[in-house]
Image (tube, rainbow, N blue to C red):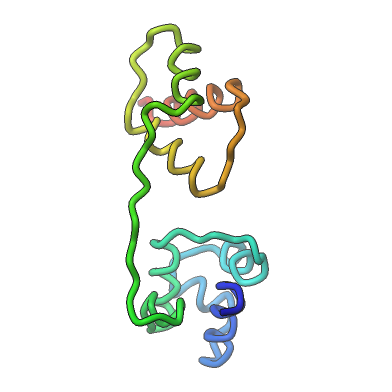
Amino acid sequence: MAHLGARIRALRTNKEITLPALAERAGISKGLLSTIETDETSNPSISTLYKIAEGLELTVADILETDRVTVKRVAPDEHADWRKKLVTEFKGKKLDPDILNAMQLLRSRKAVKSDDIEHWKFLYTSIENSFKV
């Protein structure tokens, strides 16, 4: 299979749907759709793929050229070194497990393997602050 974005672009053009029209139908930005279609390293989430499939009046399986789609949940690794270091850096503060799990997913999804604890500390604090009322 060609990269996923090329497949989406081919399906879109075969249906004579413009990029802006599909983006609107899917409820995603034109920039995101363009990136997915052109960047061979793009890795859209299953929810984004679902929105695109809906916009094309297809299924995710149609886009992936398969009979069925199986979604695998990424389990957070509570013993990961970066996570232990982060807990140590916050000096005993009880860290929100939902934020830690989201960070684990980001780490897995984007293949970010940075051990820069300042990076993870900044990210945690930014997420935490965004939820404060």
